[in-house]
Image (cartoon, rainbow, N blue to C red; front, side, top):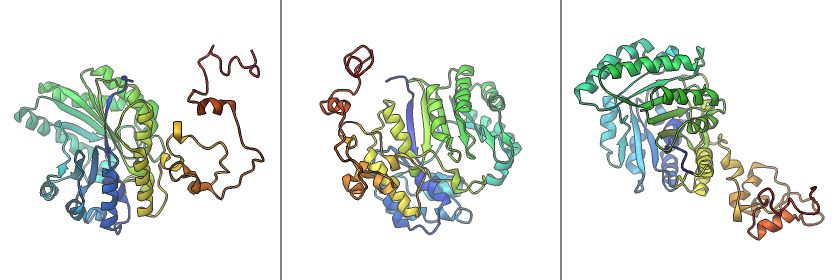
Length: 391
């Protein structure tokens, strides 16, 4: 299936996830999770943030994590650093660390002035005032391409809904500034820290960007999932993109994460990594990720934080096929622990109640057991021409 964009996925559990959790979670547990994630086939993992421990005590021991974990070949390990002091701290661990840097000089701002003031202590007006300096610096350095972007792209817990027209108008202003400087725009970043993404609005936004600026071939989506719309919004965006496009996505194992400034705390969440990878694999996108190991990482993350997290594939398992199809005669499966039979085997439900006096049989199963599909194409033999099927 070649109609989908190229997807670059970054796992953010150690940063976006842990930044809202208990600061007392042991470093050893974080390293254990980081190394387990490294063995899943994920290609890009954020290990934390070099930020002030005063406001983000959960990241106070990030130096220990980076110094002690065992990096795996072929995995990009990145860290967030928001100021020169943070960059200097992170630089001593490069490699294996990569300091997160935007590939393009980018104009961006929060559409929500309130969230911006709460989160980074800067108004929207201050961000906009810095745009000419960013453009001038990029031109001076000889930048050949640039990016534009907005945060709180579709709405705010403090100001309400933002129409796509407003989003496009703000992007238009950013685009004109680069155009005036003779630097083509090739990338758009859309961030949603307060879980206001909705599939129809994300779809419209990506479509309109593509329609207005066909030369834009790179999109970055950072979607939170407090209202369970993030994965649907990812799919909506992918439908608007083609194989000539690149989509950068970010999510967390188990879907945990959040922001103390947005009003939802841990309920903010992110798109769960295991659910996203599962969706892409079934869409025909080869991610190179081992789903069994990824599910085990979700269970490990739950054990570490001490509560159930928010993913679904870690509960019900990937869609079964072939040798993983369920046993026709399994007993009742009622609890979440019993449902783990998809990975733990029949022992997970061995004490379940079984109401069947006779074994369950099915002519459909007989076909599947012989390696045939359960349904022939319409007009074929089975079940369409069986005597028990009405003509």
